[in-house]
Length: 400
Image (tube, rainbow, N blue to C red):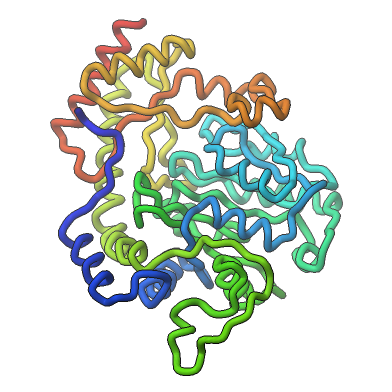
């Protein structure tokens, strides 16, 4: 069976983890701090803060902004549930908008959804393709008159915040520049299936404008990700430094050195090895399926953007949702694991019972009903790529 997206674990990974285990220091410590510095250099960001997930990274930023009951945060209808769940956790209301044919948030839909309650926008780099951030920011600046700040942080920003859900897109580029600085904060995921993994984990790239002090925000994130405690475990090991305070009731979502050790290995070989291999696989798929009249190929590159090659979002022209589900079963029966990304938010029970309806997002619905995601991972061989293509083609031909 060809798996969908197993993580890359080799001797370098094992050696790095063993080194941390032998050191006796396995929680947040020197490896995490080094990973943050190397990520900041890679992303060309002023500062990076690592935590235990993209989800908690987004939640921390919304908490910092002071988002709460009565506020609205705009999210795409086509995304994983985490993007909207974090809004619910603050007590605010997720306002869903439609996406474009590239699976990314539509600037036109965004412009119609902004109200005086809007405090933040969470665009999603779907499948690794970056959002058109210039268009998103143009809409936000054009509607600055609607922004009503509720606290000092929001007053200082003076507009709607853009916190990018960049879970898929580390390594992607816009106009040749790496993804990392195109929004006020860009939050990455290092989950097991991501291009760059730490088993579980996330990172926030901080890019706030003046007069914000990024170092001050970094310190806030470090404190609030550890119960609000004024000192982390490493700081408390210094002579006479046992005593600590709890400045505010915080959360528990720090990254560990075990995770960072894996991340350091992956980051070191990411651009030279990981991304080129994923690009090679996806280009093979693009070439093979371009010969099929029923294949709708995903956007992985255009004049301004290049994907991180995280997902291959193949669509089958003309098939129904029921046929797509049948297609997934047929491909799987041929020993190839495939997936569907994602079940749109309005179809999930948590959001259906909050009166969201998929019919309000026609592009999202049209993209989802015929989408199938194909395997993309480092160890996928040419023979396996050919087997995937053959399994998809034969299965589609049985349905059409």
